[in-house]
Amino acid sequence: MRILAALVLLLASLPLSAATGTPAPSPQVAESDSQPAQCIRLQGSLSRQTTALAELQARSQALSSQRELERMRNESRIQALENEKARLLSAAVIAVLILLLAAATGFGLLLRKRHRQLRRLSEIDVLTGLGNRRAAARKLDAMAIQRGPEGTRHVLFLIDVDHFKQINDSHGHHVGDESLVALAARLKTACRPTDLVARWGGEEFLVACTNLTREQAEQVAARLRRAMAYTLETPHANRPVTVSLGLAPIPFFDGGNDPAAAICWDYALRMADRALYAAKRHRDAWVGYWGAQLPDNATAEAVLEQPEAADGIVTVMSSVPRIVATSLTAARARSLRALRAQG
Image (cartoon, rainbow, N blue to C red; front, side, top):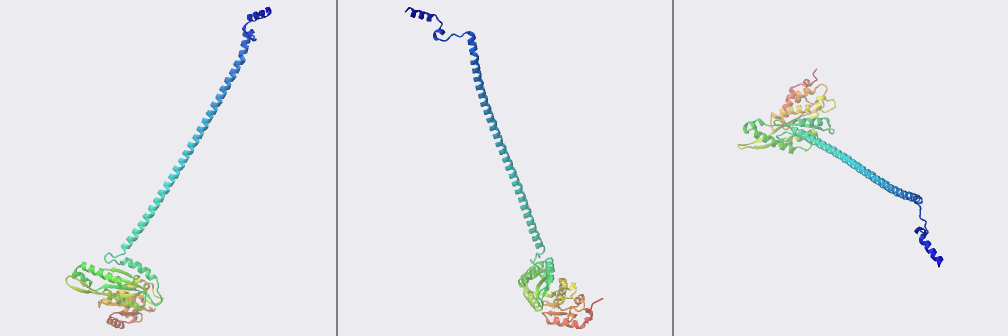
């Protein structure tokens, strides 16, 4: 018991550290023990900072990548907008060019249409609605180049209104104009759609028919004379209106050795005018000159001066027999020597 009490007292006298079995550290030992802990703490802090820095760098890199991606997206959108703008601008330029081309084409077509209208108006006689001298000359040029079947020729008819000056003097020019309009309508109705019908000037009309024989030309002349004859009704009195016709073929002579002047329609027109002059001596009649082959001892101009005297070269046709008889008498009075070539 004594020993146990002594042990108790001994234990009570020892420091707490000794009682617990842990020696009390000395100041040097305590200071040496705190450095590793600090190092550990510093390493942990550095590790945490490093981790935080790495996380921060990762976040910064992610933000940078996101910004770069956003920048690329924006550039892509800008490029797309630029491309769309260029496409729209190109489409607008093409559309403007198409509109300009369409406008130019339309304007050109309009000008062409206006030109045709003006040309047509310039070739139409305002009073009668028939073609005028200009239009007739252009069509006669084209007609003279063509040749019909064997035994046929184009035929030109020159028509003049009988006593037209008396109509104007007695009833006024407005009545004369009304008479010309009525005669033009009758003439147009009596002709074929393919015939050339024109007002040649004043009270003269011109008709040209293609591919007629001499007999057919006589029939056409008779038909035109009858169709154009009518009665003019005026407030004071009615008066008959008649016409006289002269006809000649194109080319005038039959044969391949004709001079160039006789092949042209102008020569036929001059012959038709001489025939018309002969018909006007009787009025309400028609006279025609139809040329045969021109011999070497006669000229076209000599025949033109006196066609009735060209016996065997020119055949005289007429609706009035005595006109033909008078022409034959005149032909006998002249010698064919007058028709020979003049040096």
